[in-house]
Image 1 (tube, helix red, strand yellow):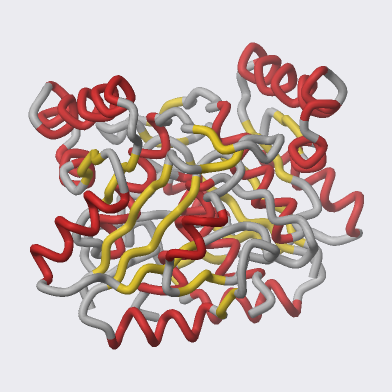
Image 2 (cartoon, each protein chain N blue to C red):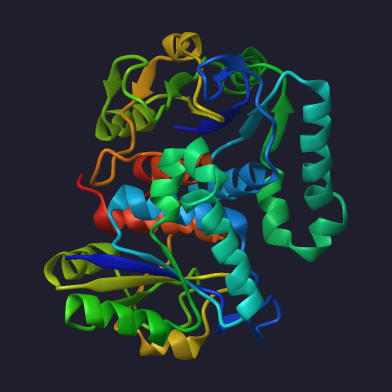
Length: 185
Length: 185
């Protein structure tokens, strides 16, 4: 039942389909941390192998959790305190295994439907409800590398609105995914 | 059935509950335009009475619709072309009335539940599906002024996850609202 979210900055694709390390975006940290707190995630892992990018993320979090921002906006502090900055997915998984005593079911997300066989939202909602722990992964830039998706237990179907257009930001896609999987409606 | 969305920058509250005009945020325009395109909105009205703020918004849109950005990212261009920058809600409503031949049902949103009597999502989903036109309003800063909410036909219930924490960004709140009201699931 406990769940975790991860924001992957590597390995992800750029516009030309090459593997890159993407830069951490301030707004992504804020929006996903607030979503994590709203929907009850245990932790929000920001995953980036570059030390200077990790330092940037930790400085942003520090400002809101211990620094000036903590006094200015307590709600933001409660959200940002859910963030852990780590180098690799394996590092996050190892922390989760230690805490939960089991490996989380790993759910990948992607806006495209040609990167693996996908499963529908209601199916994954049942899975995350009935398993001891789960982790939902979101990709930045042009999405997570196929190899990463292949290592996940399930790949969620793309979010489709009413047309074939589904170029959402990772912030809004994560919002819709968490609401579909973890809302109490 | 056709629907519109509006992002209100006035009259909205600041942290201390005073009425202000909020500043236009680049990321809000991008994220909401992409949501509008995904869920099939007719237009996305950016509503701000300040001329220099309107100019800023039009310059951002121009870059993506006609400028360098249009060639760089066609998907973004398709989304940003849905934006109309106007001074007041009345201006947006008047455009909609002209196009649809009727006033849209006006749906307000708010994170708090003390600013008017709220209605649940399934109820509003039925309304927007069965009416000739509707418009969903999102507030920036600390939310839309009570007077504005009172003028709407309905106020949607706040988005609640699993706890009493519901301090989402307008970007992610709009994502969840549009998915709940207009997705084809």
